[in-house]
Length: 252
Image (cartoon, rainbow, N blue to C red; front, side, top):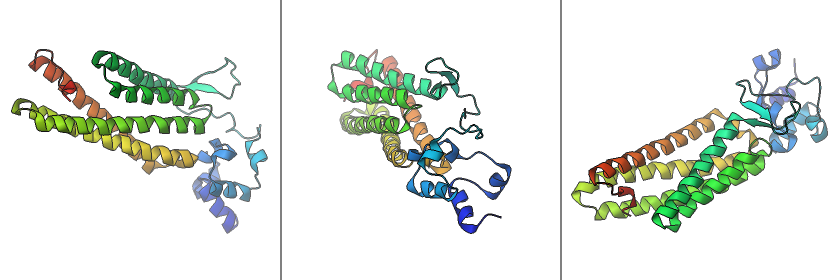
């Protein structure tokens, strides 16, 4: 029943025919006008919206006070249940994950007296700031995250080069383990590069987070990070036990 141009606009806004007929929720319902791409703004304009009307509170719109269907939001920032800014589980996990990187970087800097670990500290600090803004200012959060993952990428390239040199110089009894660590470094590099690319996409396209292909790539990148960390842990404990407490990971 809709004119073809309006149907096309509805598809761009995230609707299928079935979703439109039942009044289903779509990702654009949760974007501010400035967070939408120009293409989405044009599509919204087909329905008579402009910036003021799109961002205005509408008591007839059930999505204005939207909260995650999996109850991700835990409590309001100022204690007011009507507040528009809530703290989410994701935000808490993000914050403490970044904090662990800062703590680890500080401990390693103190233990090894190496400025290399400043990269991890800076990556963690920008991750902390990104976590703080993630629910209230998505664009600022994305910019801070972009800086953070660049530091991680620099760290990954440094580790790969250092471990590769150590692999060449290692004796036969260490070469196998060093090869495993280089394999872990490659996964760190690939995961970090994917994170950097995704961060640029999210920075310039607020709707990209709803793209299932990009989400799958993001999950793959996190799996690479997890796998490389498990390899590093195995190398540390294996060598600690085999060499009487000498940390292989420091033989750079």
